[in-house]
Length: 465
Ligand code: ATP
Ligand code: MG
Image (cartoon, rainbow, N blue to C red):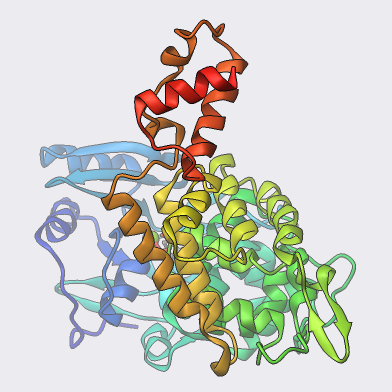
């Protein structure tokens, strides 16, 4: 099979230079994987990976002979990082993977002679493309046709490929969400089989041993975060819910959970999928959106034929906390997501007093407050069309925040016109008592009982003593 010269993608000077440096030394080199895929799609290209026929020592010698730097970042797998014209490139020797006995990593990798062998070890056809500015596109697995059709198809026998490396199951769902592609039916069946799910899907039930047992929690977290931040996340959450529930079993009860209320036209899972879709695509907001209603099934009760979920946000928080802990998310991130989950349904009238109170609940963080507004807005957009008044409330809340900020109104201890030292100077021993008094002063200021002015605060502090 030959490369197709009729196809061209933009290639910058630094990339041309790396390819040239390697080929000058008699090696063969190609741009491969995600950069070719994204360039063909007209999407921004993140990093350019290079596959090269040379062993890493030869590659290193070529790069250094050209006066550039090559770092030994992964030589056990034949990978160097080249620094050329201020850009970094991963340059990896053509390789074939040995057997996989741990369901995640090849037991060994060995150098290959031809680019075709290297492409064959890659996960999806759209990722198994190689490109060279002079030779054109090399596409032995029909990746370009799949790109045009919007299809994710495993390279080779899908069952085998997912059994080799379970991470590919999550990568598949993530690419579906990022690219808006559909997973080809045989590929999807194999993904489900690897999860221990019925091949025909639908997550009403799951086998007792369902799950991806060979992927580290951190990798699951990374892939799910990529999925959540995708442009087509609603569709991915709906189509691949069963696969997603194998790594997030806490969310399975949301599937088809009928809300029995006029406020909702969707079951809890589809409502959730829409809320995720309609939040800004940052990891914190998207995770908060995913988890915001996970306590609903536990809070549910029916009265006179109508469903109620009082206190569901409080029930969602510990579930969210457990999910994020299990996935080994950073503690700070988890705390922030949990705060948003817990407060997502709290009514915040658009008045400075109430806004400042919520700011205090959110640890004085205006970025969290803005996220809360965005979450509330998305939540409301995912209600039935007649019950979306929350969209306006969220906008009013945010406008009121601007007012509070513009006027420099106090909502945190930092902003009080007195400090710990001032309180200690009143003869109160430094320690918890000072903290207690400062907090009470802030309460009094928030309640608008006293102004945030030094004299008034000192007077109140003496009284509190
Ligand atoms: P992005 O960087 O946008 O996540 P990508 O396709 O570049 O997408 P990387 O993880 O950077 O993904 O991997 C680069 C290439 O390596 C992929 O395009 C694919 O060809 C191959 N690859 C990565 N991970 C795997 C895997 N687990 N199994 C098989 N091939 C893989
Ligand atoms: Mg990449």
